[in-house]
Every structure is written in C-alpha cells, then in structure tokens.
Image (tube, rainbow, N blue to C red):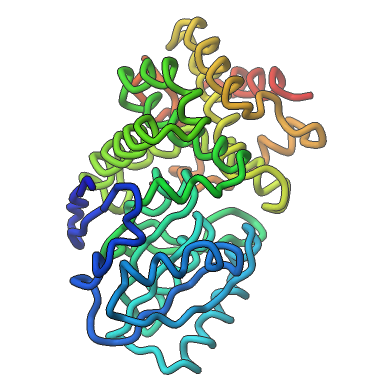
Length: 359
Ligand code: GLY
C-alpha cells in the first residue's frame, strides 16, 4: 500500500492506494468518530463492494443509502432527497458519510457532506478510474444545474481517500477508457515523462495490468495533489486541471448530461485544446498527432457529437466557470507538460478548431 499525504490549507488527509484495500480490516477506523457511518452508493456498486468495504470500516457497521446511477443524480433534487434521508436517520455532526462509487456519487456525497448541518466528515472510496485519479482527491464537490455542469458546489476536503485499483476489474470498458482521458490530461499539463510512459503502456492499462495501473493511478494522484495543495480554492494554478474541460463541459451540457461520459467529453476536449495551441503556433503539429494516436488507442472520441453545431458549442463554452471579466479563459499548452491559462486566444482560431472537429 502507498500512502500519499494530501496537505491542503484547510486539512491534511491520507490517500491510500493499493490492491485489496477495501478488505483491509479496520483501515478506516482511525478516521471515524464514534457516530454513525453512512455509505452512499448505487445499488449496483454496493452489491459488488459494500461487503468488502465493511472490512475497511470495521468495527463500525455502516448504514447504506442508495442513489440512482448516472449523471442525473448530480442534482439539487437528489441532494434534497439525500438530506431528507439523513435527517430521518438522525444523522448528526459526529457522523461520517462514505462515498462508494464513481465521480457522480463522490461529488454528490461530498456536496451533501459540505452542506448538511454546515458540514460533515466524509471519506471517498472511488470505484471508477476517473474518480480514482481525479474526482475523489482535492475536495471539489458539486451538483449540476440545467444551465451548466458543477454550477452548484463547494470546496470540502474528504478526511481520507481509499483507492483500490482492484475494483476496476468490474468497471465497464467504456468507463475505463473515459478515465484514461483524465490520466492523459495530467501528462499533458505537467508531466512529459508520464506522457512518454503512457505511449509505451496504454494497452497495459486497458488490459488492467496491475503494475501499470498502480503506477498510473499513483502518478496521476501525485500530480493532482502537487497542484491542489498549492491552490486549494482554484485561484490560480488549479485551473490548469481543467485542460480540455471548457470544451468537454460544453459537450456534456449540450447533451443534457445524458450522452457521452465526462471522460469521453474531456478526451475530445484535450484534442481540441492541443489543436488550438498548435493553430496559435504554440506547439508543433507533431504533438497533435501523438495525442490523437493515444486517444485512438484508448478508443476515445475524436470528433464532436454529430448533432452539435459549432455555434451551439461556442455559445455553451461561454458559461464556463473560468471566465474572468466576462472573457473566456482556456487552458492551452506551450509545450508538452507545460499548460497555461490563456485569455487572448484568437476567436477565429477557436472557431477553426471547433469546425475542424465537427461532423
Ligand atoms: N477536477 C479538477 C479539480 O479537481 O480541480
């Protein structure tokens, strides 16, 4: 087992990474107060992993609250329902929530923990690659609004994160591939060596080879923590973690969060961000080919959804949270492993990029 320390200004907590950690008896016990433990999960995930997780939570016997699978659960309506169930169960400030699931469960549970009675402890137990390398670490929590993804949320750090790569064996291949988009993201933003490693090893990740998976998850989490520790509330460098997301969120919003997976939209967003960087003369075109090839090997989309016009996509990008003084800011690259926030990209280049990837 590896233990990474997440040292944020508001709190410090461990990120445990290792196979079979869910079944490690009593692992989470030091983090629990003496109150009730409530696991929030979906029917499918809890069937697969609740029995194992009870070992890590031992000697506590957790209650289970179920929420439906899918991005539509990241809603104020679902938050309201969850709060009602917690109130009826008499959950109070000494109790702990545990998010057992992917990014949707993690974000919803984390946001519930942030709001419920002005703040409960919660633990992240991510069961998708995307949540293991990104969403579960760093304390971003949110639900969606019809007008934009993650528009209602809070920074609220978990008290521990338990990453067991063994659970990825039950992950559908589409979700695994979507998670790889976030892994590729770290390499592009700040880790050129990791990018070269991914070019060598991406098939091993797709085949769930344990050694490759452990390496990629730990490297991604380290990269993420090195960024979030210095900028917990995203006043600066943390925004770089949104490489590809201004494009990706706009695609998801256009589809009412019911089309592509988040990672699929981000994967294409990475390609668009690299394309725009190349168009602006910041990057050699050769890198575009390398990114496209990695996405292709991971069978991730390389064209915009057929029913999304470039005008609509551009319009939706304008609601992005990274705007400053009404001006859209995009994360672009000036070299492999060197991302920056750019406000003065030529609008014509952006439109060319969108047109190039339109159907
Ligand atoms: N998922 C991006 C961040 O945590 O900042």
